[in-house]
Length: 125
Image (cartoon, rainbow, N blue to C red; front, side, top):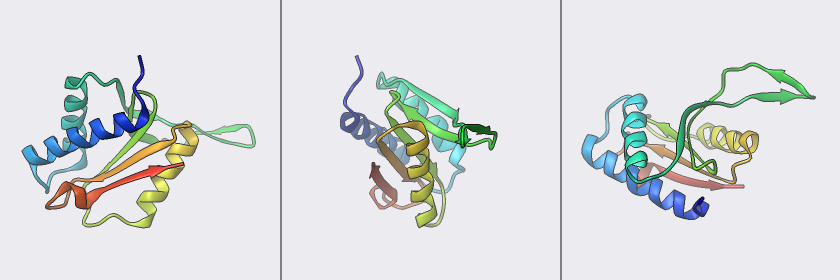
């Protein structure tokens, strides 16, 4: 049975905190993605990594190679970063992925911070 999106975001945040506690800041995004995928799996959540996200323009498919870092339980987009600071373009990226995928909730997580809560944004449509 699928969980409620807010419950999923709480679990993803908990898993991300665990990853950040263990690894700390300073690694590549791919390392955090692999560790977070492991944590989510251990918590019994279904997720897809590097999910292709097609774009259509006036009914025509446009092959742009967009990939969503993680989609958890088919309901929550999770976009990971390892950058100095989150910028408005990062929010726009998550919101666009949410619109294209039909997911109503998204998490933007920057692991390159001293405390994970400083690099966490929850977005909703």
